[in-house]
Every structure is written in C-alpha cells, then in structure tokens.
Length: 171
Image (spheres, one colour):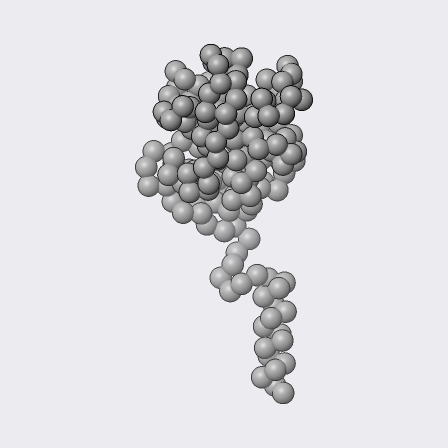
C-alpha cells in the first residue's frame, strides 16, 4: 500500500514538475561550427546565456523544408531550403506572439508569430542547392511561399522577407 502511494506521488510530481532533471531553461546542443543564428527573448531552451545559438548543421537537424517560389528580388522560380520557422520556434520553446528578425546591418522588423503558424514560412539557408552567401541575401533569408498562397503576394508580406538574418528576438 505504501509503495503504491509513493508511486502515485512520484507520477503526480512528474506531471507537475516534469521528468527528473528537467529544468525551466532546458539546454540545446552546442554548435560545433560557425554560428549563423541566435534566438533570444522569451525562449525556454538555450545553449548560451539567455539565448539559443545555431550553426548550419543544427538548423538542418530541425528538419529541411523546400519551398519553390518566385520572389521580387530573383529571376524566375527558385528552390529554397531551410527550416520552418514554426519548427525552429518550437525547438527553442518560444513563448511570444511577435518575432523580430535582426539583419546583419541591424535592420529589424516585427512579424506576428501567426504568420509562421498559418503558413510554411522558412528560414532559408540554400537557394537552388547553394548555400546563401551574404551577397545572395544570406546566410539566412525569411521566405514566404507566395506562389502557393496568393494572399501572401502583397506589400506588407514582402516587407517581412528579411534577408541576411543573424538573430530572431521572441517577444
């Protein structure tokens, strides 16, 4: 009877507090090569003080998604590869409604998280099989699947195609 009571108590504690060793701020794997993205703000999983840092390999490990679409800045349709922003935000335990990408030149723009929940928007690191370079709007470029969703072909959404992304701030 006592053993059964202790087992029930342990199960209840696991539900309330999470598995043994679980902490509010969980650790992500450390990057093993050049960091190309940092995620900060309202996130639960980190691998550096108050932020999550990713190299290309870590982003690829979150799942590779391809989007074929035209853009106002390129000729014809291009095949972009990257991580779905929805999956990236889930991986870091993001708890915010606004995502602010920061570009290499410190350009910032607020994007509602619902864009990433509603559409398969990606943070692209390749275009037509080639890694995005800074001169090609890399290393990371927010890409909307505008050819698949005509409602995404407008001035407001075009302003959210932030390129040369180095950081995402979650608020």
